[in-house]
Image: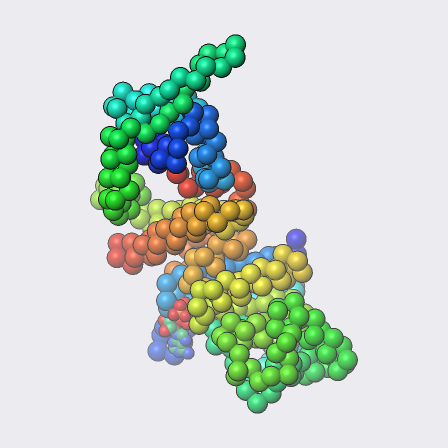
Length: 241
Length: 165
Ligand SMILES: Nc1ncnc2c1ncn2[C@@H]1O[C@H](COP(=O)(O)OP(=O)(O)OP(=O)(O)O)[C@@H](O)[C@H]1O
Ligand SMILES: [Mg+2]
């Protein structure tokens, strides 16, 4: 399997000497769903921002689709971001005076897709995310969970190689969080979407193929999760009568 | 096993096999396979203690079938069980023993123990999440188990914060 993202010896020091990352090596395969967990301040967002070119490393390498990107100019990075990466954050950052449809279509139009193609993709995405009926409304009138679904549609409109999500369920109640997670899973399971997702929520992390636990700016441990089978329940419940 | 059997008999007299079926029907997808022998052993203990009684029902060409029913004493015992609040979940935690003692003895890195334990809980959580249970009762039980695991994972985070180094 081809890795989509690779980092080697990635470090990031902020002004004032904060060493947010101290040498991170990760490799994410095409179609893989990786969760990143760890205590507050351990460097999760820093890592995600470096993967998506929202920030530059102090040292080390980042490769996306086999191409070294850490030293690209901002203008070139902007292209890589637009064409290869979708972002979803805790807060949805939707544009309130554009309709849901326009919010989702905008990055597609900016990427130079034909309006017709963008419209078709948008319609399909909104439909599959269960928010087709809101296309003409302002996102400000939607619930948090619905707004996050709009943000996911926007992130997927350019069919990015990888979806980077930083606490996408962090601002949602647990029912909406589950729905959003189910949709991300669906994008992964059914369309092979590669996902790197930062979360505090064990329930969310447990849905991934692999969990990277970070500590003090480094990946402390890595767990590959296996799917459960029928016998799992009785064993795990340890119920006795 | 005692109280579940008493509770089932409160619905009406039944023979051993019917009791097994009733339990399996209600908790089937979340229980390990039931041992028929265990049911009969428990029934005979309940009978010895005067909590159930049995009537032998003659069957054509086969040994008598024993139909069990609740006695007054059994009904009282069951009421007590139902009325009492169940004690809070265990704080007997084998992992915590390991963590404290192995750390004190200097025979393991506490962070490594925590990482390994976290991986095991995550895997368990994953398996519960992958389970599709058909009935509402089982779904509730699975959800309860998942919530316990979430708490266990949060508690591991605390262990890491407070005694990781
Ligand atoms: N712009 C910045 N300038 C200086 N220090 C920063 C900056 N951004 C992050 N840091 C520091 O770098 C470290 C890692 O921060 P980061 O945001 O990556 O953590 P995180 O794991 O995402 O935490 P959280 O779970 O709270 O979101 C922290 O100590 C943080 O204070
Ligand atoms: Mg963060």
